[in-house]
Length: 430
Ligand SMILES: [Zn+2]
Image (cartoon, rainbow, N blue to C red; front, side, top):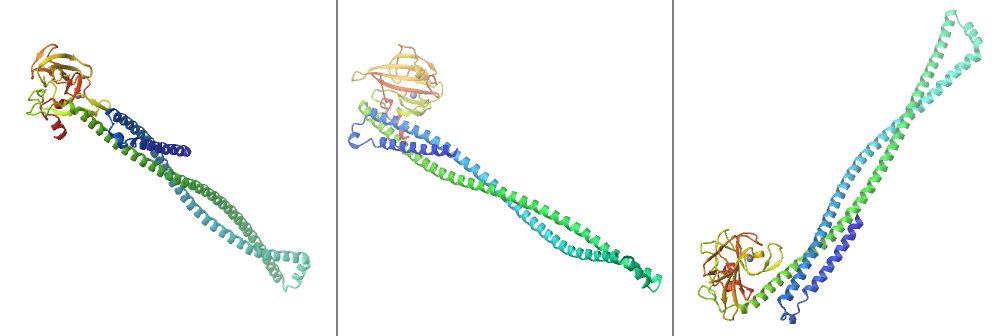
């Protein structure tokens, strides 16, 4: 597992560096002399490349995050194991200490028993010798001694007394000898017992020392692993920071590219703009396409925006006015209804033809997402005629009127055709 992590890590760092190189290549593709030739299409291509790069960097970041989480988990579990082992080592150390003191006390007892044994042995030897001498004396002198004892005695009473005395001494010595024998036996047993217990303690101590040595080895391994994980963690954090920096830079670049695209689009749109609209209405005299009492919110402007369905940049071909379902939609100008039907993504849709401008281009307006249609195809309308009710049919995320203006079927910014500043000013500046 360790090797795998290390491999994945080095791979991640390589990928990260490669991404950085790609990123540099991408950001470095705008030398000044080319800038003048930049078109929406070239900018659009760069935007796509930049988005792809960000997407890839983000996946790499996700992989790194996973690796970091894994390393963190491993570190935590290793530290936990190390703590557990350290606690076990501490317990063993206490046991060893106890065992050592038990062993010492046992050895001392054994030494005492041995010393006592020697003393008693000496005493025993002495009494044994004494007893043997007495026995020998009796044997060697035998009956003679009895007669001698008898004749040397002053009286029978004296003889009996002397004989009793002799027997008494003989008995005492023998008693002492037997008692010594017992003491010797007891001390020998004690010595053996202490020796046995001492051997047990010594063996147990050896086991404990072995266990401690094994645990200490494991602990050292865990410490080494923790250190290794620390290095890995640091490398991953470095790679993560580098990748995050690249993503931030790519996002900044993307934002700049989008602004550039919008600027280019606005530049392209400018020639389309009629003479400065004045007096509160656009050049085509369009009126606001919602009834006067309808309160609305500018929910999306004309031009590039993030598509609410895909989350990706998409060109919005009109303006969105969010308002209550059933609000009245009015024809922005006089003309003829050319469509009053379901129209794909626009849902229930009305299109009104308003004739041609001075350049001979057909002017039409489009009203999308209606909940109900209030006109029929071919019907002539005036500016302000009720043509539909606001809804959320088709590709829509809420009740709103989508309003588009087309010149020869090409979508143009409705801001320039509606009463002056009605939309743009309030949306962008208000
Ligand atoms: Zn719309």
